[in-house]
Image 1 (cartoon, one colour):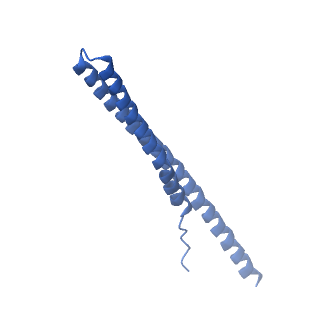
Image 2: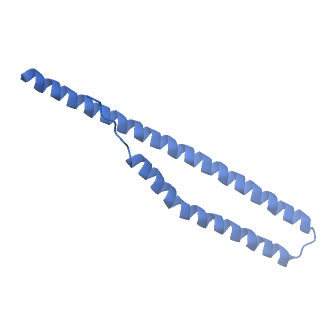
Length: 114
């Protein structure tokens, strides 16, 4: 009788260790996904910034002798585009965070078949 109880305790301890390993692995994967997402977002931002800068320089060089009013309109347009991107980024930030949290918290544990 005592041997069966000891085996049961050992199985429980083994299951607990396995659960801790699974949770630890999930946390590690979450951190990796966050780092990857951040790096990808930074690359996208850098690409967008370079595109905007190139377009801006193109508009400046095409204008040549443009008046200050045209230049002011171009700056307003660019500022509007930047504000839109910031707004879109901040609105998507919550959704991305929720998706990452949901993915991390929705860990499916596999039990040993008997």
